[in-house]
Every structure is written in structure tokens, then in C-alpha cells.
Image (cartoon, rainbow, N blue to C red; front, side):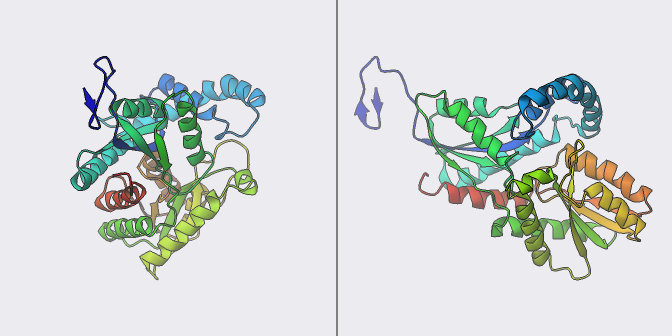
Length: 344
């Protein structure tokens, strides 16, 4: 047996090595739009101390005793409205992104790179994917969290989980992490290109474009998390790039939960305020989401429409995320190829 041109002893176990891996990571999803599956997902998600920054001794009784006995049914109903033949939209789209990236990088670099995806919570897990990559011979792995804006409750949790998994490995791969890309020219250009196309295809001309980012408690900003600043910079750069003087652009934050004060202005409150203030034609985009999910397809597209039209609005549209569009995949290829420089 030979390895790297060297003769090995006959009883030497086969060892695969020499490949580079890319692991795309998104937040996660339940396995099914059912209360039981949602309960398991929420138990994992909401038990992460990065997500809920309350001492566990205080938080767990609330989570186990109240939230996990009330919220799963409501959340399952929301998931059921957007579930597809391929399952969760988020999982299906992330799989498409990995497949598209594999095709693009394969055309450039041959078979020297393995591309896959994982979910921070739920399946496929980061741990299972890292072990599969290591077994396949990936001794260099790029972790690519699909969160354009850095947040401790998203980006940092990926670092935490990767570190936990590697802490159990004897032979660890070399790692790189894709940095937050909130102001990357490739990201802003992809958003502007994709959103301009979608706006041009609408049957009405919006008076307002709402850029809705996922919300976080106000306390995270006060503790030094850069998320709010990253969102605002993305919105400013995107507005400059779109260059539509007749279109008013507003930035809001969605998905409030609990009684704590969250980043403002809130998306739901803004939709009602705009309609009551006379805005009749409005479009919403969610540039902080790499893939459409329950927050965009149900919270914005369904509940948001009801809020806007119920308050007097007329025409309403939610624009798709970058997903696996040409613009989105070109951006991912640009960022990932740069981070792989010197490895392949």
C-alpha cells in the first residue's frame, strides 16, 4: 500500500486525506410541521445560552414548564403553511445552495473539494457533517455560516458547536471560518441585482421598500453585539446601490419574542403604521436571511400581508431571499473561493 508516494506497512489501516471541505451552515428547522418535532427543535434551540442569555437555572423551568408546552402548536401551524414536498424550505434551499456551489467549484477545481451543508439546530447536524467530512479525507475545512451580519446568537453559536465537536477529535482538521459579509461588495451587488429584478417584475410600483432583519433583544446591542450596526450598514449600502430616488427605504426588525425590549422599529408595527399613514403600495425584502424560511414565507408573506392590508394598505409583496439564485450563487462562489485560496 502506498500513500503520498510512500510505501506503508501491509497492516497499516487505510487513511483518507488531502481534501478540502466546505460546510455551509444555517440556523435549523424541525423535522416535520408537527408539535412534537417543533418541540424537540425548540428545546435544542432555546436551550442555547447564546440564544437566551438568562441563567439556565432560571430559564429552564420557564422553558420546560411553559414555553415548550404552549409554543410548539402555534409554531407547527406556521410551519405547516410553508412546508413543501421536499420538507422545510430552509433545508431544501440550503441543500440547493450546497449543490450549486459544488457544481461551480467543481468546474474550477475538480474533485479536490467536498461541499456539504448542516443546520446549527436539528438535522443534518454540524457534528454529523464534520465527522463525515473527516472520514472522507477532508483535513482542511472551511466553515461558512450563512449569516451576513454577525450576531452572538447565530454566528457565535456555530463557532461554539464546531469547537465542541473538535474537542472530541484526536486528529483534528485545519479550519477556516467565513467572516460575516454584511458589507462585502459581492453581497451588496448580489442583493441589488436580485432585488432590482424582483422589483421590476412586480405588477405595481412600491412607494416603500421595507428591509426587515431578524430582531434581537435591545440588551444585545448594549452588551456590545455588532449585529444592529451590521444590519444598518447593509441597509445603507444596499439603498445606495439600488439608487431608486422615488423609492423610500425603511429598515425594521421582526420576530419579537417575550416581554423584553427588542431592536426597533418592529416590522409588524411599521407595516400597520405605514398603511395607516397612507402608504398603499409596499414591498418587503429580508436581506439578513440567506434562504427563505418560516420567518419570510409565513411571518412576512402571510401574517405581514394581513397586517398591512388590514390597516388600509393595498398592494403588498415579499421579495425572495437570494436563495440559490444566480446572483446568490455567484456571491457564494466568490466568497468561498477567496477563503479557500491556498488550499486548493
